[in-house]
Image 1: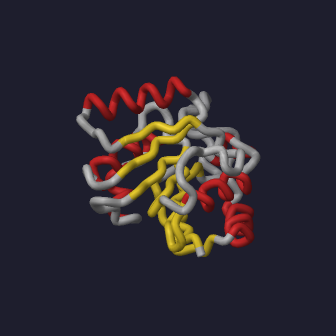
Image 2: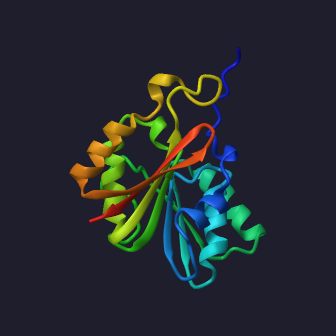
Length: 186
């Protein structure tokens, strides 16, 4: 049996998740932290926040950022700004601290062992009462996604989140192979 190891964002309905779970609306400031080359969540968010809003597409790969910028221009989404950053380094992301209404970490944590550092950087970027949405691979889905050892332990994630200063708002089903959780900066 062949394991599929894509990022998995194509298995998620970005627009539905952003409208139903976050209720994104015009004029909000949003960060897609680890946006990926397809920019599924970046582009969907840009449409929802409109010209009055701003979406920061953040990634460590410059080629990914070029791809997202190109897709945004082709779709006439001029409210997308790309930011090159290592999310594992506190303060590295060149976005003003406490400026984002919402931030997303979609299929990012399974790629790192520095979950606490990534959560700290997301916390720094969010406004007080801002919301972080995390979506990642569910443990136990054997055919799709990364190796089981790389999948995120939700209880460990919750523990880090509390220590850093997040309060869990809710968990949600993000699809057949993914979990979702909303955390508020307190």
